[in-house]
Length: 280
Image (cartoon, rainbow, N blue to C red; front, side, top):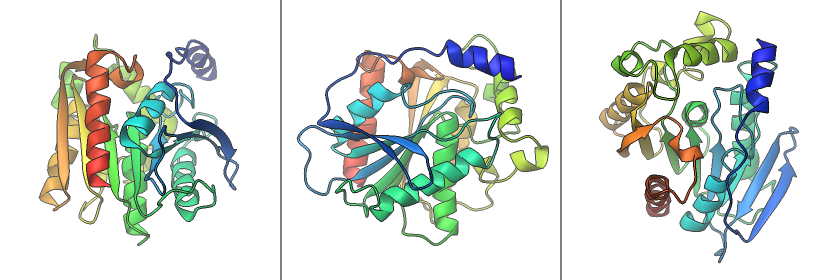
């Protein structure tokens, strides 16, 4: 398994060309978690804060994979983006990544980073496995009775380790992320069945969703994770959480990691930024 993971990490795509932001800061939290901070051009005083959790099946990815998207979102939404380099499985299985994301969110909100942001306007955003982590952070924040997050953005999130949806069957092979690979990711991140059914691993297992922050949930049409995202959006709405579900027609899993200048990707980023600006 370690050899497979090492090979996949070695062939991870290089970051696409990027746009200019006001500044990029490399920081380490008081828990030793590396973060990359993007300060937008034309930064206003006390702008909002966005925690960004990358995808990669909890075993791949890092600060570079969504560098371009972070830069674009910082400028479009006029927010300071904190890109989190959480620990990866199999070296660090659950709860390592979850704990890193929770602690980094608390660190950023506390003002310990000295970023000069309005921490009362804080959102979490994640894609794929990072979307699952963002949802778990929002659940943990609610459960702990902490200052409410202002928003969560879940992009084709991994929310359900049971993988029993129709979209898992319909798009099991040939559409980028495949069913067998997702099963491997789940089993590598959370090594027992009981752990995989914990709500902070599989947010779809949470008994109730009331009290969560306003949510933007983005799904791709041809994605094994489509149905679990759509179902979570429906449950959020039924629980009284202001929720917007956006389906990207014709897209497959992982489209946000491609060039931000591609029309479909640019449109998705613009929608996300507009919603964040409106909500925060």
